[in-house]
View 1 (cartoon, rainbow, N blue to C red):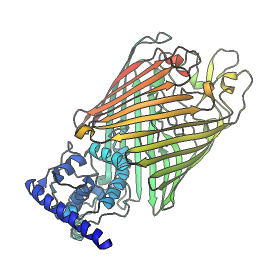
View 2: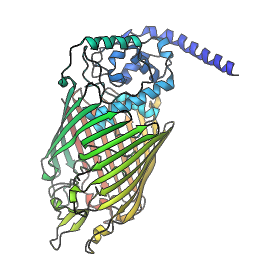
View 3: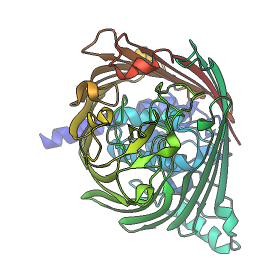
View 4: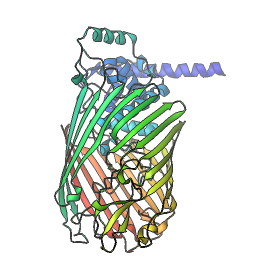
Length: 579
């Protein structure tokens, strides 16, 4: 039986080689020069032609055939201007499909880490996840823009922002020897050769359907600038990132902001890494809300979805190996949440003094918070457990004596979190759940906040189903459904106390990286209460990306959290210019 199976396997391989021999010779012997309009998907598709091979096999075969064109041994980092030699049918067929898939997925994660520094845009690149299925990874490959690669000259060895893991696919020895000889003969490089800079200028125009509850204007314009510098040592063990952010708003002074999104030094060793400075950390896997994401403060006036974060000072030490990944955090300084001012929209109609924040801790913003997170991948199951103790990132509201004004109040809390996703073919099943315990220390007059404190459970669970190449087209369609639960019920600070979120994600897989996400959340206890959102983006050219965002809110009940936003439906058009 085993001999027969081996013979069948050999026959399939011979058949594939014969078919490929009829197709591949018709293709051009070379691809390129590679431009910023090219994607990894388009290059591999052109190299494969109509041959019956996995895209993973073609991608790895391209890298093996052109090792010096792929920066840092990463398939997602293609040198601009490179001319790629198309591998032969025999070379593609010799690639093991499973090993190729593992290599592509591992490189994809390192590519995403670098994209954070190079600012293609978090909305365009997708939110960080714990892991990806083959379908999800291929979607990212299709949208991976080959742009702004690390600078590699003819006399400089290729560098990578993250130390490369042991490569699943071996680079040909001859190419390695040539590169080594070239670097030995090259003159010493200057430290500025490893310094990269990226700038993003954003312009956003927002239109509201109605005037605000306090007669705020129906239109506003804001502008932002994100500057990023990234440097890495020659041995790739040390790197430094510096990323200041500026924003100015036409209407609301509370939206004006000067922030350090990132400013940290990173040292990487064998099985460990140490980070000191200011950074942004994202936890969670669900789409509709992010319960476990507790490290960074939310920049709420930027976007109500809670995905924009302020930079957080931290000392982070990570250990990783076959047993999993353990992250430890010390957070010595607290960032207060940004809240809309009297002339801003999406705010409570209360006389609020955001600059007069109160704290339960006597150390106020200098209270030392800490957190732990352990993550482990078990075949197709990704799990992560987290623990946080310190100042709550979510403020309550308390009255300032008899003044009639309200002030944000930040209590102390403990939070245990569980997040996971299980990948089954085209399905990704997702879960985020938390148990949170507040330390109550309020006067009886602050009943509004008292009802929200104590301890509670909350969870978001659901799935995403991906349809790759809908009806033999280039389009990918994903369906999302998530159930939101909060044990506090109507006393919850958000709308997800017992709601159902339904959504759809459409990817064009074109050179512009066009994507659209639509979703709405329906309150299961009140048929008249719902909210919805739309996010869309596309690249106009190498330097310009267009964005469209929209939100709507609908309810007839005053006890619903979205009651105060019922007049704040809006559409926002944004333009990002990369230079």
